[in-house]
Length: 166
Image 1 (cartoon, helix red, strand yellow):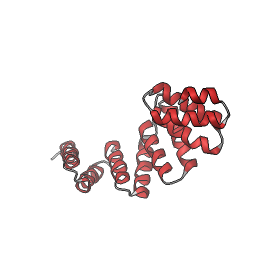
Image 2 (tube, one colour; image 1 turned 45 degrees about the vertical axis):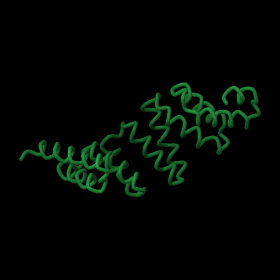
Image 3 (cartoon, helix red, strand yellow; image 1 turned 45 degrees about the horizontal axis):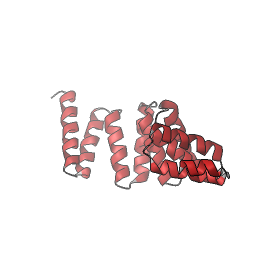
Image 4 (cartoon, helix red, strand yellow; image 1 turned 180 degrees about the vertical axis):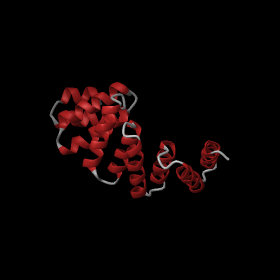
């Protein structure tokens, strides 16, 4: 049987397993896809995301690193890696990942938001404000971005701007 048919089958089975909430079995099918092609971006991204969802953060980080080795310009992978690093309290690594995600996709509101959230407590308020403002420009429905923007303004004693952002 040709590998392309096997890959299609494994991908379909993984998708069905996800629908039935059988993440463990879905991961097995993604691993089978990697046996056919160790650099398969879809399989690598799926493994990274699913292991992160299961709380296996170190494994997920390794999977994101494998994905980025074959797809270095994948903005979503950089964002997800940054989010994972943020959860692991690696703020420097998260900042670098969010910056890369923004460089690749300047319209990623979530990357701007998360970068702003990290910069604020580091007292890099001007940069935090710039990223939080960009986040609300891209996604005006993000209430958390408005809240964090108001706090950042308040910390700079820019009361009127803080009130307007709230």
